Length: 231
Ligand SMILES: O=C(O)[C@H](CS(=O)(=O)O)OP(=O)(O)O
Ligand SMILES: [Mg+2]
Image (cartoon, rainbow, N blue to C red; front, side, top):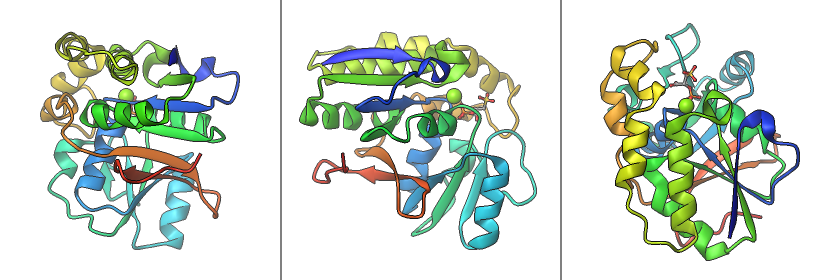
């Protein structure tokens, strides 16, 4: 299985299989949303789009990165979200890097969104499908975010059937600029505890697949080993 690692701006074609990686924090948060019962996560293109969805569906739960804002129910923090009951709810998520990365490959036949908390489940799904090539979208810092690149390389190793020691990859992520900013409280809408939650390897047993659904929304859903995401 060939792997290529690209930043969002480096995407020039429609990949057959894309794994969009955002460790800190979009796809750690989305995984927590599913763990807390969310039925689906709609990936919004803009804050305006997220607010329009909320206006049309007042029961949907809106989530953005950065500081709290009127019209948004939650921030992009696993620590601040993990005690929220989201049973059966639709969550609308808009972040700077993660959601943008998924929308950049929305036409790909298979889009997985990943972080360390769903690493093995994501790799297992790739092993089962055995595509010729996987494009890893490294969402942060123009494709150079160390936490995203480390996670992407770790998943690629696992997907290729290698026995991979996770520790060096987790150490790279722990030493990343994002981890430092979250620890130091530089990023709004965060707590220092977010870093540890983003580095919990395989916390969840499901992968996450995104696809454009009937109403033209890019929708992220959890996928277990017995499910088969459309492709
Ligand atoms: O919420 C986050 O940590 C980041 C915000 S930013 O990239 O630092 O502006 O968003 P994400 O899309 O989850 O990387
Ligand atoms: Mg990020």
